[in-house]
Every structure is written in C-alpha cells, then in structure tokens.
Length: 319
Image 1 (cartoon, rainbow, N blue to C red):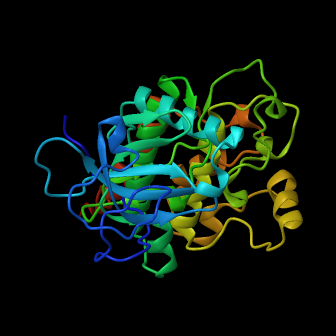
Image 2 (cartoon, rainbow, N blue to C red):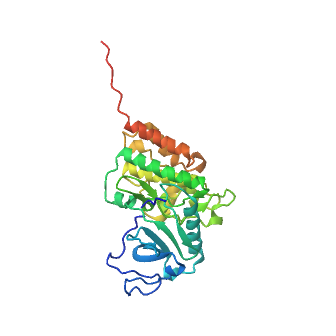
Image 3 (cartoon, helix red, strand yellow):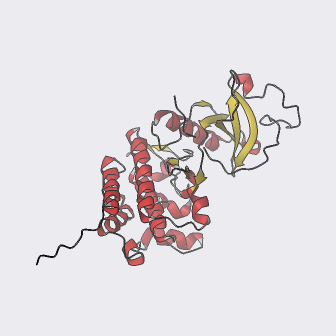
C-alpha cells in the first residue's frame, strides 16, 4: 500500500525524546513501551500539533525497521479523556477514514475506540498557511485545486459520508500541487431521516465555511453541505478575499443565512462565465440548488480547467 504523506502545524522541537501519551516525557529515548505500544502497534514520537480537544504525535510501527516517523497518531487531550462526544467524534473519524478510498482524502489505518486514530502523514502546507502568506493563486491553479477536492468529496459521498468540515485548515497542498483533505472528525453518515439537531451538527466546524442549513435545526444535512464549503474556498482562491467580511459571530451567521454571495466575475472580470455560474450554484442557500458532490461536479470543474488552458482563438482575416 502506498501512503500519501499529513502535514500538521509543528508544535514542539525535533530534539524532543520519545514520549508516552498521558505520562511524563522525561525518559531515555531508547526503546520503551508506551501506552500505545502496550497494544502492540505504535511507537509515539514528538508532538506535531494540538487543538482544543486533540493532540497529534509522530508515530511509527513498534515492530520492524522504520527509520522515519511517517505516521500521525491523534488522541484526545488528557483533560478530556472520557468525554462521550469526543469519543464519538473519534469513532466516526475512524469509521469514515477506513471506509473512504481516495487519493485526496487522508485514510485512517488504525484506531482504538476512545483512545487514538493513526493516519499517514501528509507532506505539504495547509491552504490556510498559503493564503495567510498572501501568495497569489493563479486562476487555473484555483480550479485545479477545487477539482481535486471535488474528487475527494465524490468518494466521501460514494461511501455514504459527509466530510462536514471542509476548510483551508483541513486542506494540504504538496509541493507539486496535490490536494488532500484531512481531519474527518466532523464526518457524519448520510441519513436523510435525521434533522440537524439529531446529529448535534449546528455550528460545528468553522463558521465561515458552514452552509446555511448547518446553522438551522430543522433539516437533514445533505452531501451538498460539502459542496457549499468547497464553493466558499473556491471563491476565496479566485478573489483573494473572504466571502463575507463580517467579524462578529451573529453577523456572520446572518450573512450565511440571508446575504447573497457576490458573483466572482464582478470582482475578477477575467473569470469565464462558466466558472462564475458554477461558483454561484455551489454557494446557493438552498442545498437542493447546489451541485451534488459527484462525478458531474468534477466534470464541470475539469471543463473549466480545459477552458482556462485553451488558447484564445486567433482572428482570421480574409482578403
């Protein structure tokens, strides 16, 4: 099996010795069983990053000869161990990551309920890091990136899942431009019979990238929720600005629910009409008016790629 590389924001130092999870890190880096190794699988290395509820460590199989730390082990922070909702999130991540097969979605290759998930590391930079650096995104690269992500979301949907947290922080671009979606912690099964409140999904994820229906409590969440989030990202890549410039939570929610998204062509005049129309469809307030995240959306984005790469027709003059 060939593993794609997971870039995680670096926290800590290369000089850290091997640490165990939940115990003192001050011990010799020679071979020693950590709590994870007691399960017979993984040796835990320096911390790679952390969020509000989770920590991510470098990891490698505890058996065999592995010189590199080519895997990432994600675990619940010690102060939240036993939290039922976080355990459920990690379980969903493990299920989704083991069922979805795509070159653009990071897989989960091992897990233990309530304890950890293990993924291959993905090498590159997060899209949020690239955008924060103010690097210009050529129009063709923006569409290419969106098309790759649409391919990943197509496989997510085919496996009967919704990613639920498509945002720049969860997108890694390699130095060759390969796009990978990471972090399936908010993934949820496609279930048309359950309203949003039944999943406790309202306002989960990052507010600026949540579709309007995830800010309400009365409708099921459809795969088109991921289409909306991808549309927001594509809008940002094309225009270099956020979809809505409001800053307070209340104002952002109101804009997501009721303010019409501006046409990208009104901000970037050289955008083809086909792309302007597609972005508007992806950002529709009504999820049923958005493209389904399937092969058709991939084909539409690919068609725009071809259009952008095609040379302008030369005018022919006849004497």
